[in-house]
Length: 129
Image 1: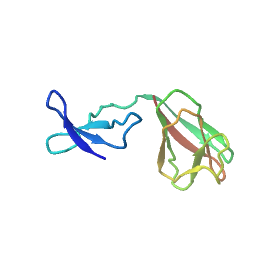
Image 2: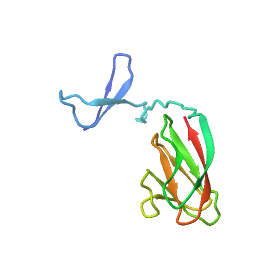
Image 3: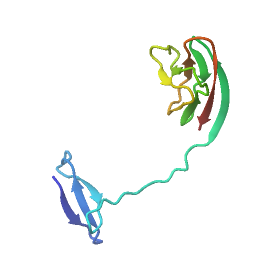
Image 4: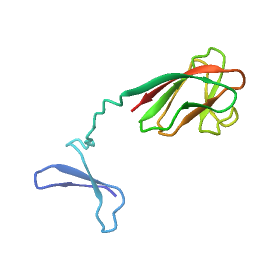
């Protein structure tokens, strides 16, 4: 159910959604053409906290330890080796695939591990705080 009302200052509001427990609805501000007015916060993003390179082998290898951060970017610079990332139990069967030359952004604070099928591969990481 939707409807419109004007407040004491003459601002037009639109009622959206299902009534709450007291029978009211949540108001959303609209302009005179019924376009939803949205406040957009600007965020410059995080700051680069640390970078590094790690040699990943055929068993779960710590890429970056747990920390307080916004996320981690892991890059697989290989031209032929597939990287698999995940938690401490990551394997080539259950890890998130990072194809050769690709990167993955992980919005996590937990530790990130990697594994490859055979041999070793140096991977890069960027930590964003």
